[in-house]
Image (cartoon, rainbow, N blue to C red; front, side):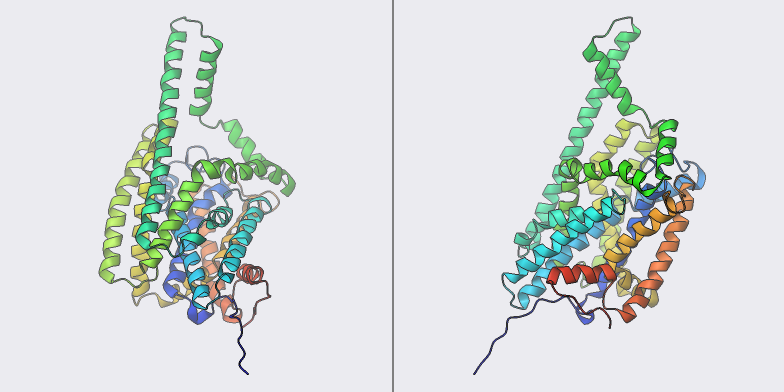
Length: 432
């Protein structure tokens, strides 16, 4: 008698992992904190350092460096790797002959990720969460898993073009509001009495163009030094905005474009380190050459009139192309590092951080909210901008040391283990 058994769905084992993907995921994960730390530690200072944390000397230099090299790029890289991960998951399951079960596993995986994002945003008090959007837009990727790389790339670039078009619309509208308000204010200066509509236009522009007041900055600082409930009430509206209106206004183009490009780059074997040294060197040179030129232009523009709203919106016109090229430059740099024989221990540490990316990402938030928020040590608004990076480097060192040690005894990070257990509807083996 012959018996057949249905192939079982199960997570990847250590020997099945692609080290290059793990290393670059580790780099992206650590790099994300370079940008997020400002949101954790300072009020309203992410895009405008003049509001808090200092905008001179070392503080300004830190802002300039992060703006040139890291703004949007670590998020872009992390997003690409999620796109690649979706392809890797479905291909592995389909190669095992799981058929429709592949879709079952895939959709459970992204739906649980979406829920993790909601918990991260609301319970862990981080409105800047990205997991919700990966889970949400991941729902659209399954039918595209077998699409040729060139079509995925074209679709990603087309969607990025929509983001640029949206940015142009925002700039055009903002410029028109400025011109209209300026005309009305000129009339008022000449003694003309403005009607209600004209006064409303002038007032609306004034609110848009005016920086956050010192009183508003102090108020934000004060509330973030309160207890958990007060901070939850304060941040919940921000979380609702980012997971609703903002999602379909501009985040959709930001995330979906890089997910598709990540899928294409994975199929082209760029993210797995399989291309030549010459290829990655060219990617580095072209990516950084074009990306730094665009980012330098944007930086000079927004600094020219002390972060004036029109200049900030105008810089958005080239934001997506700039971060795309910089992200490609980062890929080239990391892959040259991966293929080199130097810093072997660092590579192992980064790979371990990458294998525990979800755990380490959430750990960033746990550490930062307890360090900065009022129910912890209450350092919100107390550090200068450059001093925030002492916290970043401490977290990096901790995760680079802890992650390899943890994986020596356990197969997965704790959140990865939970995610896999929920995805496969079976408690996974945890200890080695």
